[in-house]
Length: 409
Image (tube, one colour):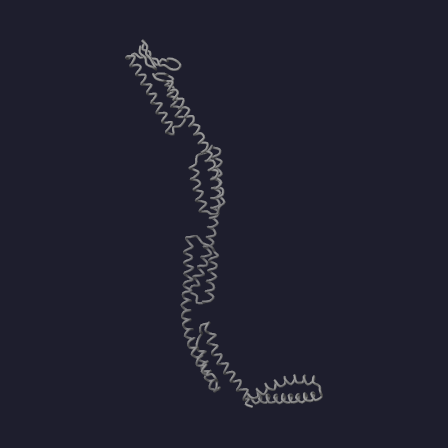
């Protein structure tokens, strides 16, 4: 018979292993010596030791699931409990028990982690739903649409919840996206209708603008173009593919008209500038007639100047008052000279002036006599009143005498 600390072989070839519960039969060995039998079954024991060590390492360093780890532990435990090896089986059981505790602890940790992840995922998805429902009411179509697409990608990256919760949140999330898409579709449908109406309006404005481009009725046509521009701005934008072409046609028609008007106005301005120069020369020639000595000669000269003046066309509006004022000044001087001459040579006017002067002189003399009489009688109040009346008559007499002198009297 042969033995070691953990097993023995009896004389019949039966191999035993020693455990805390006593000896257990390992098997029968007939192929060799008892020492070879023990060595064989000890090698099988070492194989279990290696297997347990590898499993301990996998549990510690990899993400081996608790279920798979428990299956592997049970498999090894079955081999240990079958005691077909020779070695310290109780030590193996102790290691397996500790490994079970490690796996159970990891299972609980992962359960808590999954619960935490699920809770975080729930809060994350609820936040996505709330944001999506807010975006569903937005009118920022591009930004809101892009954000909703980003929320979908975020949703796909989150863990699934329990079926009921996940379906309820997804239903709200999907409904918000659908509501936004429906509103956006309605908005752009309305926008398309408005742009189509704007296109029709602008087609009409372009047609009128092009019909006016050849007009030479400068003022009214320019005013109408301004009105067309106001109508254009009020019409809103047409579709992008039409807007630029319509604008180019509209602007091009205006450019044709205003370029022609500018050309005509430039010619007119040049002509009026030349007219102003000619009229300034005539005004200077007229001013040389002052002061007027020979009325008849001055009158004839001014008539000649004025005939040449009338033959000249328009001058720039802002220069007109000054140059015309110079001619009017000479004309007024001629008129005053003619009036003075008429008064000096008119017999009827002279007679009227002399008669009025005589009447005023008689009245003044009479008042002076009345004043002397009142003073002599001591009636100073009457004398003062008559003196005030005398002052008025004397002023009229002085004025009449001055007019009489103009007749050469």
